[in-house]
Image (cartoon, rainbow, N blue to C red; front, top):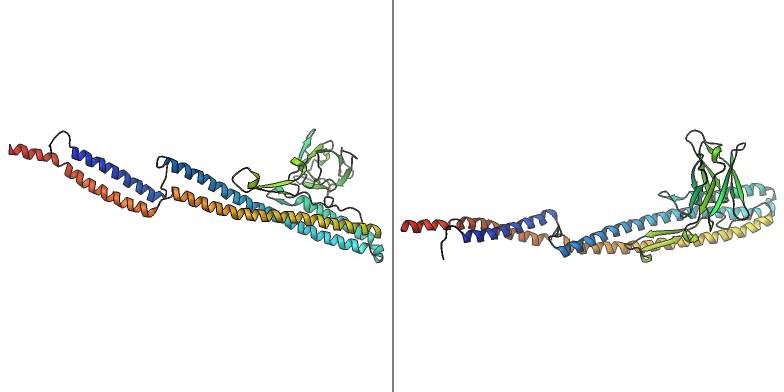
Length: 374
């Protein structure tokens, strides 16, 4: 072996291995402290790309699971409202049965007044049932005001509207009775006049004026008198039906969605018509109630089917999410047994390298021994 003074090859070789082992020890330390085997694309470009894609899928699947849970809750709200409407239909059938009997001829006016009140309550339930600010029934109905906007109109709800084509309504105001008239400009030009409950609001207060004939509720404020002359246009959702679509997957495809057509459950939508002003009319009304009950049962069945679909989809999403997290973990997360073993190995190798570097740095000293011997 040759001895040279200017180049200590043994020291350089030892330094190289010391650098390699130190870097490996540092990497093992990073893996143990962070919990990640792959912290950046430089660690494993292919593995990083795969784990990133799996991480995105995991996040989206969790969002889809939340969508499914929220959808189930929304449908439970709908079902609760339908159950209450079912209770009211039961009362209406009782009233009709009572009115159809000859012994109740003197009570027909009272019975018919109660019928009207119950039908109004059905309309109120249909129009006011919401979930997180979204109308549950006929949630797809949209509205737009045209002409000169009025400061007297604070809001419009078309949740109970069941039209199949865009319809325009003229709004007029009668000062003497503090009433508002809504007139359709369509075929037959039907209209409905409703007095503002409690009169024109004062201050910052508002009042809801329910046009049950159209399924439209106007919210007016203290400037209600200026509402006259406003034109209201109500449009149905796309396709003419109210589709509630819940995104329960990570792809924009029908297989990743649960959809339900859920229209208004107002008394007119259920097919309730007629009155209890005579025994004969009461008999006809009994038949109308039977039809309404059948319609409501069908709607409730559809809601139940959608709830079941969401339940199955949620279970599948949870399984997919678990497997996705497992796949991501296998690629990205630290194997502590292997990393600790590597850390120990490289720690010892680094310590040994430091010791050997000290020895390698002593080799040039042997030249002095040769020089002294000379």
